[in-house]
Image (cartoon, rainbow, N blue to C red; front, side, top):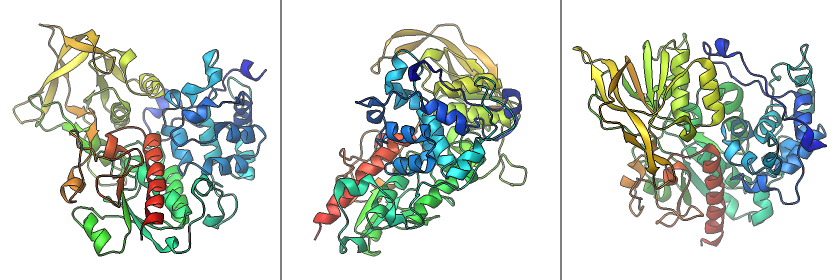
Length: 506
């Protein structure tokens, strides 16, 4: 029976090898492996996995096509609801979303939905998928042939080059766009996952969509925040952004809305009928402890942006980046893991400093597992109290205190409590603060009528409508730092709301 088949493992780079390069850690499935894993799906009458997906991909339907070897058909099903399948298949926390709801996971391991989504996105054409399934060496566990899957153009639009011919639940839910509406223009601020998802759906409805990006390359946090070894930029991200462009979406980089142009200027002077704000949450947080102004203290945002967007990890780029010899990364989320694993690859001995236990780590289990395999040191129940510097103003150590878990806090997690007299020093010449981020206040400060929450996020209803008519928002700009797929879901909801707003606008 399908539920007796063990979950098909995924081939990965050897930890000792990958700890010294920026190539992708996970190789993904080949065709035989993907078909075998897809055969484990129970095809439930009430697919809870779909409910667990923030963009409601019809998961059993695309998995059924994978099991039959119909990769273009699977890609077409995913494309109805997701414009970034290769990205989501790599970075989404499936274990707490779709896979976390998988019925098979109650007694056995859940279906590897994320790995199957990635396979479909990377190998959409039938001939690509078949070539990916052939290789000289067998899989060490399953005995199937396979090496790293061949890369090639995706067929997320299997109907050909005409974007309007692509099947989409956008049209299914809201009807076709009247000819008059097709001339209406929408500005999308930010080219991260929320902005790309919103722009994609609006473009499928026929709107004239322009994305404005503050940095010199599109992608937002996908480009500057996630390391190359987790999300290859040219091989994966660029291709997915090109798919969005192919729908007719225009992307203008180096435009800082609030400085280069304002939202009022877009609406009043540049002919846009509505605006979506998907600027993310790029304002880093610090601890406020003594010594954070010493040379050698970074926010994770700065450190990762230098490495990812500005390619500082490559010898042929001149962007400076300083990892040092001993690095302490403060925090326990995915960003902390990314910063620590990046510093390791730059040659540093790297430690994660976290005030709770590993059980409470908010990072994905897969990322924690990979970090441990690569040699990252974990200092648990440890909290920094001061950054220590030398006579030249450079970091020399991180002064910490031991912690113990007390009563649960508001989130249900047990609160860490300092142990008096347990202070100690951790030698370090670089400290990276990975403590979360907040929305940048620039948009709200330069746009009248936009209300914000006490944490700096834009006030918006469930559909994405802000406190000012015609301006919508979603993703981290509203909620604060969250996941890629949640931002995409917010972008899609806002696109539907913009569609309704413009249909009813005189």
